[in-house]
Image (cartoon, rainbow, N blue to C red; front, side, top):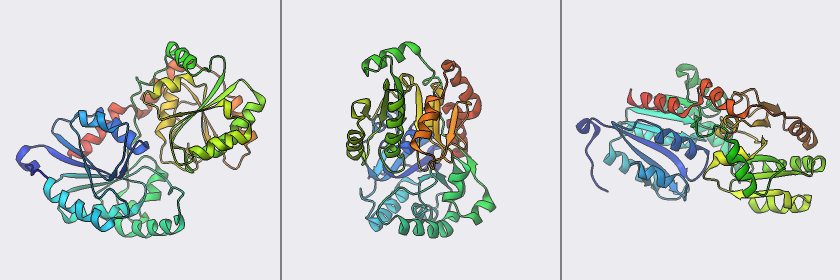
Amino acid sequence: MERRCSSEETGVKRVCCFCETWESGGIESILTNLLLHMDRSELEIDIVAVCLKESIFTDQLKAAGIHFHQLSGSLYSVIQNHSFFKKLLRERKYDVLHLNAFQSLSFFYLLLAKQAGVPKRIAHSHNTALRKSKGRFLKLWIHKASRSFLTGYATDLWACSGDAANFLFSKRVLARKGYQFIPNGIDTERFRFNPEVREQVRRELHCEGKLVIGNVGRLCYQKNQDFLLDIFSKVYEKNPESVLLLIGEGEDKQILKEKAERLGIRDAVIFYGTGRQMEKLYWAMDVFVFPSRFEGLPVVVIEAQTSGLAVVGTDTVLQESGVTGSVVKISLSKSADAWADRILQTGKSNRSSFAEIVKTAGFDIADCAEKVRNEWMR
């Protein structure tokens, strides 16, 4: 690896943005938005991940001069990952470690950074629970134990919501330090409603005259599209002129397709895959439905509101993300039929006015990026 000058010699702050895995998920979207809208003068930014996977965000960040470093490529090669990271710390001499985490065992990288003399070590919480996986209960126990021992190695605690802070950080350290609220910002102008493009996209999707119910997210247990299919089947019974637009990829895709077949709604469900021009897809929708089991502060809900959509979603997930007055909160304990009724009861409004409401509420990406940059530069 090429040796580079330290920040003391160049006058440039060197920042390590760490993720365990880099792909096309929510954390990657948030970081990409922040970095591309940030004044990057006097900053040299690396994205470091245990495993770099194919991502819709990588090329645009590389074009912006951001470097990528992979550790071992495997989450299971723990010793090798730590060894690679220590070597990277020695060579890159970071001023800031910005660790983006969804579980506290990754806080061990904070300890390694402290030992290497990195002065600012940020732990940033983006979620409120662990993903479903084999050995989840053991992982949760390890998470709680790690949280108790490792939170203290962070100099700064950041979170997208109070629930996200309470999930990831130890109560003792959180009580002593508090946490910095960092909104999941978006480019509000980009998502401002465009009725002409809406009609064009609806024609492309063959959805003219339909009620388009949308959902954006990884097709997985956390995002709960399994229940969404049950909900949509009830909507479809009551309004056969309806379509479900699922945007995302994930491990549950085939299972969901098979379930849609069993429910007799396969022809009314669009498995769109990963979307690059998300704003156009939001404009094509009529209602955004988000029955997620757990989240930090879901950026897709902010995007949906900015595009002028009514949002029907899980009450516990939407506690801090309802900013436009168009959010309907409902419990996952309610039946699919009850969810369907709430969806069909949502009204229409002046969609073009919502972007200004979201911006005023503090979720514009330019403001969020400036806030993060100022914290890095302290």
